[in-house]
Length: 254
Image 1 (cartoon, helix red, strand yellow):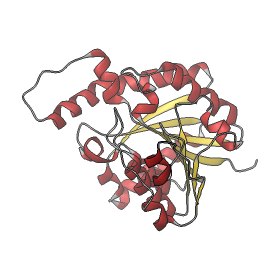
Image 2 (tube, one colour):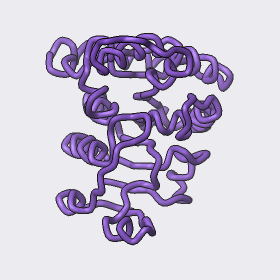
Image 3 (cartoon, helix red, strand yellow):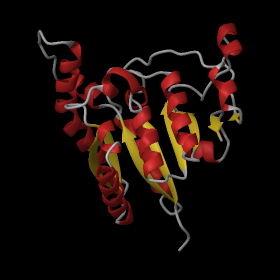
Image 4 (cartoon, helix red, strand yellow):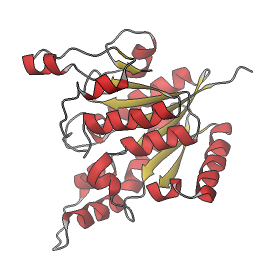
């Protein structure tokens, strides 16, 4: 059997909610449908945001604590619901899922890194798709800064992914000039990474806490591990399939 292409797919909250206030089951169905069509040649590992967005659909917490602690509590409430939605929908497409919660500190210890690799390889080799999220209840980095982009890049590097896909709400990275002119133009291929830094117009996402700068930093981590990064518009249907067939504009960072 030919070796499958290992893809680390990072999906942000804005993609999962389709820029609304609710998790979109239709978007998760779209992701499941694409993975089902590609499962003969690709194996997927997903880093998914969305736990806080799910919880906000059900509860409104009252607290005098700092906002970060409220967000951690929301993540605790929302994470099981998020995984349940993934499991229900993926099962309809004949796909098996599992939950993995990681913290950045896990990547700093040799034993923890080894355990992550061994566990996820067992899951993937048995046709399970790991759904990875930051362990928000005990770690605050993702809530305050990276919106899981960095976690996605670290995981892709550790698991020796062949491709790192970041699903966001733009058609990749736009040139600074085109953004200033109000006519966004996608940078198709990035060969000179330093030059790319000058093109980034940073903005925060609605539900997440990242922005294009955090995606560039994540792509830099992947690049250091010799992994190609694609930044796609995850709001569109069949965004992965269309990117493979070059039917849509997106940014490819070599």
